[in-house]
Length: 447
Image 1 (spheres, rainbow, N blue to C red):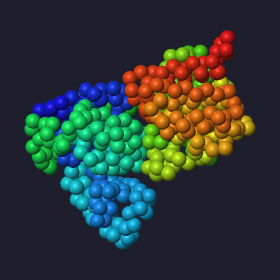
Image 2 (image 1 turned 120 degrees about the vertical axis):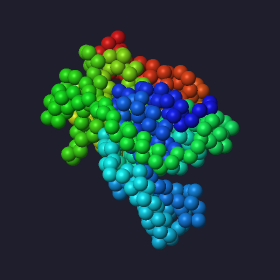
Image 3 (image 1 turned 90 degrees about the vertical axis):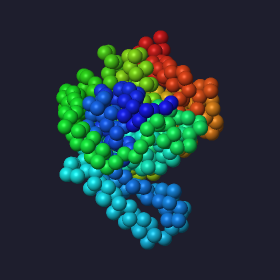
Image 4 (image 1 turned 60 degrees about the horizontal axis):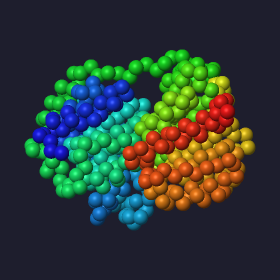
């Protein structure tokens, strides 16, 4: 796919992002070349436009290897593992960070002028560049945006090499790329006009965009939110704040089809959130079968910035148990768990407690091994779904099936890899989950 220029690329990219319009996103362009592309995306979506100024922190003497990233507002994301493995002296690392901080401040001052940053907390944020080569800067931008409070991060670019897109998927909730040519050598090869974007053009586009009146998020349904806060039973779905205990409330989306007699709670995996398109596709299938769904974030945005938290299975399971108590307190007695990846381990660990209220569990591409000895204590009927080409995880699930002492079943989706991205694979997951939950949760399921 060849683009005329960045304006053309931005307009085509905007069409691929139209589905985000109802989420009222914020669009961030990576300066300088990403801003003209982001401008077209923001204009098409009626969204506020801003720049995302980040600096990756390269290991001394091996600057291509990033040990972290910094962004505006004092955001600092560091990989302790890479720092440890690099063997670098602390003083050398601090020197790199100080130099990059100075450059960050210089660039931010240049592009931001007197404008305030657009708040990202709780918003869907689309990070846009004119193309991706290695993906290091894009990954840093996603990390910084998430640390700044974004609820969902979408990375979008007109063109990128296939391997870079694969590497970037864990950094964002979704990656949208119009073209991933196998013969990729440089971004500029895929533009007829790839002339340099000047600072003045960036400033002019940002000034023009600041005059727009962007679509703001619609107010949450008061009935559902007030009910969530005062502990009363909810009669409608919508955005909720899930009380998981210790005064902590986590953002969630509760969907209750008319007459729903059961609710399935989703425990998302590492690098994902309640906005995961895969989990939402499964949830829609469950809703279509008359089952309620609750998708919520097990971690706060600040906690998600530390990758170690997504593998803290005990802590995640405790939050899932707290959310289950909250849901039962609203009058929902028939509850199921749908867990993906590390979220499946948390779901199984939560289901293993003696007083577990869950009546059925489904694991998609799960890591049941992370639930450890607790597997033998699970009593809820459990369905393990794994892709046929996800060989390592398949072996782990076969071992887990042998350790489970409850009603259990292992379903292998032929030809599917870990994320079930192959045509029809996710539909198969949705059908299997729907049938399992309908059978085990609804009054007529066993009829």
